[in-house]
Length: 527
Image (cartoon, rainbow, N blue to C red; front, side, top):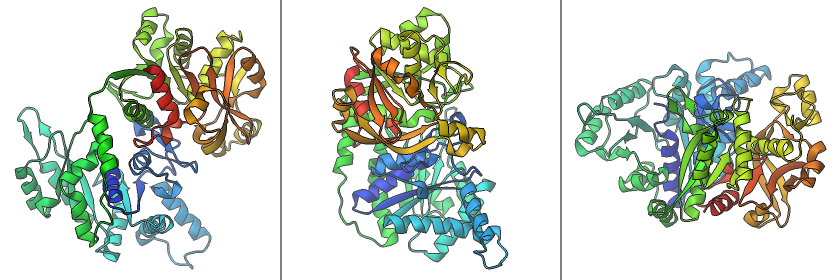
């Protein structure tokens, strides 16, 4: 099922192999027709992760980067839309020599070709391939067909891992294997026999359950791997190692470990599990309420970046979600709640909903000296708040919320306006890695310790340079500039414990072994 942990499992297996000295890459396959994840609602699909080359992709790519401590690119991401788009383009270019182009084998062959290119380009020993969705779904069949064909072409070099959920019913207290048996049978119908089954469950799998899965799913009991819930996903590689997964994989493909060094990861997990003082962080967002439930995947990179910085500073981050719309009321009690937090984050987002609430939160943090960290939209709103309440521009806003306003402190660049006028929406966002020059003597300079940095972007609107001089005159510090287009990347305030906002998304480059410097500096201020 969705969110069962396929991404974390893929990343963890990759980490296990990496610890043994192998070069590892990973590919995420999503079965939807969308060419990328950029146009999808984060409440429905989760966070849109952005790579250095500007690819808007599934959040699992973020998991791969964090676990493997490497940067990925567009080649590591495949969707049905991309595959069909490529095959149709080849057919139009007469690359099929007049042959009839068919769903099978031409679509699976395109998938296989893309997977092989990843291995060749990255010179990897192993390429991890995660097929999104659920076994038995119609939209997955072509990718399962590609996987079956790969096994046929390279039987000793292709392994299959089925990640499946074993529910424990509260009413009877027994863990049930029938859903796993069913999903394995559905996989068999697609011509695939799993080499391993990862049994996700609330509790560790016991021997009777492993034996039952072994008998009904046709594999060795040693290849049934227990994958219980853990406090931190970074524990998963160590759990898999205890189950012998790394050795079993190498045995099946006939390889020996080049080295075995998981000490760095073990030290990380030890540090995570160690009892630590708490630091309370409030995140004011609008992409986590779905009916009666909260979907935290919408901000997964922000959550992980806060945790990484907390661990690096010997603190356990305690995160609480605050709905921005609740702060649009005039109830002073809502704002008094902010004082219980050590720091507040206003993350990215799109659209007008909840904006005024976020602006009021930023104003409260500014006036009450609560450490504040704004990300992307958070920076734009910090500039609007400052323009309204410090510079006296009462109708200051963004073209995103009111394009007819006289005071667009946040606006589109001229070339973007023309593209939007021509309805060329795909080229109107600033995506991927952009350079930034840090101003000496700022909080950002203290954090980064270098002048020239590169950070990832995903936004359409910029701080309007027509207002820059006034904002700076009134006390706003422009701490970072993109030298190519003279765009504001970071703003700060003096005489405040921490008031920093970035136009880019620093959370996308934070890793558990290398926490992002701005998040670390924010947590230090919170402490």
